[in-house]
Amino acid sequence: MISPVISSLLHKYDVPAPRYTSYPTVPYWDFSTLDEPAWKQQIAETFTKEQSEISLYMHLPFCESLCTFCACNKRITKNHGVEEPYIQTLLKEWEFYLKIFPGKPVIREIHLGGGTPTFFSPANLWKLIHQVTSSAIIANDHAFSFEAHPNNTTEQHLQALSGAGFNRISVGVQDFDPAVQQAINRIQSFERTRDVIDKARKLGYASVNVDLVYGLPFQTEESVGNTIGKILQLMPDRIAYYSYAHVPWKSKVQRRYTDADLPTAAEKLTMYQRGKEMLMAAGYIAIGMDHFALPGDPLLLAAENGKLNRNFMGYTTTSSKLIVGLGASAISDGWGAFAQNEKTVEAYEQKVNEGRLPIVNGHLLTEDDLLIRGYILDLMCRHEVLLSYPASDPTWMPAVKERLQSLIEDGLVEMKDEQIIVTDTGRTFVRNICAAFDARLHAAKSESNVFSKAI
Image (cartoon, rainbow, N blue to C red; front, side):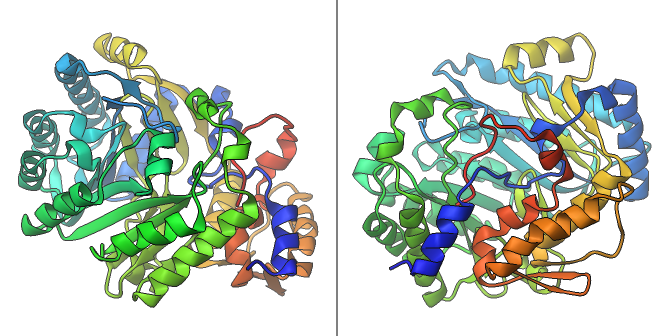
């Protein structure tokens, strides 16, 4: 049961807000600040400063069927003839970066995202990873992970990726309730999910993550409880428990259901609290905004040691300040600049095959951007921040403190001199708290739909 106080806060703060996997967030990038020469220079400088350690994100956008809840960039097809030319293009793009780096890269992290990475054959995935890693040094404590759809992740996929150095798997579940699965067009049995996780563990995968989502169409507190009860039979090392992002203006397939089919903000919070209570009773510990891990897990240790980080892939143990995104729509992060690739497969492949970096959008961070980025990272990862340096704009700090006043009055944050501390209640509203620091969000004053709601 939601208390009247929390109910009032939900009504007040269930407004659109960024998820803050970056700052500035993509809608407020200034594309005029970054071109290809500036991006190459940023990559080379960050590579040198970070002593050649990098992370790689590879976007594999193909899926055989369409999950209606998904707002990711994807291409639906059953034509597996697209695999070979796409992989060849990824490898060409990687060659471009190898020529930019001042030395041989040390790969700390690889993440295969989608789409559905296991749309690709085991042989093609092994070929892709082998050719990338053979031109680099693999860090001893590397973390190589991929997103697995249980319906098409075979034992051969698990073997091929394990042989290529992968040691982490993230299994998409969302919800096991038949009505919810029908609505989101993701029919997936618990038995098949369990089989993939069991086989991954037998092959030596060191970490299993499961993705769950609350707030889906026709989802109830009971269905959430039933799903988490089944997942607890498997005891994955980590669980990501995401709030469903309803953005039908961005993802038209989400228009297949209406707001009436979705839980209210209060119902979503009840679902989250039910799930959190079940997970914590089973021994999991909450991390950041939406993650849970068992004691001893590296993500939890990073959080406890103040070393948790957040980037376009979500919460991570790695602190790499150079993330190279390969593939259509992939975003790269050079710490001082962001760059996004062409969004369609055709435009991406054309530009790479013409011998050009396929970036289409980008942003060169100002000194103020970097300052605010650090503050928001502290809030998202450590739930506190010390306002030790002012922005060059003298109006920014007073404006932040003014916006924080209502959050303080509502018990979401505490302020001790220049230290801002997120309260236990405030952790539910951390996106709203970060928004108080977001200079570009407030400068834009956009009234159009840009972000999903905060709760």
